[in-house]
Image 1 (cartoon, protein in one colour):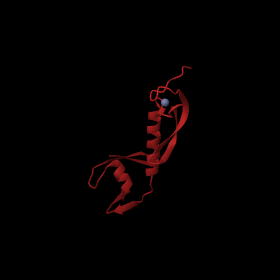
Image 2 (tube, protein in one colour):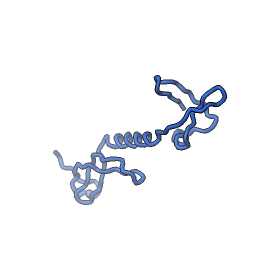
Image 3 (cartoon, helix red, strand yellow):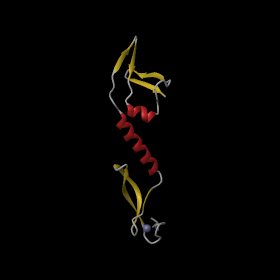
Image 4 (cartoon, rainbow, N blue to C red):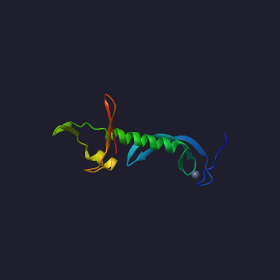
Length: 111
Ligand SMILES: [Zn+2]
């Protein structure tokens, strides 16, 4: 395998390593990248940025999963949206949405 010279310091050699990735102080995971043997400059490999983005998205969505109750409002039922979900989706009172059952256990809301 060809040894790559670090583009930062032009002295060190880039080694493939697992680099921990942090976002807002929280560790997202370890991703494959190259680390310079001299200046320790880190860069993620091609395709890894996509993987990081996907992982961050999954973590955020997982963090947004919340239990809510179905309430009676007149003859209809309503579901309340927690503030953090409203902020994430950027929705507000009065916004029209489309609801659609996906199966017997899932309701999809198109914003
Ligand atoms: Zn370097």
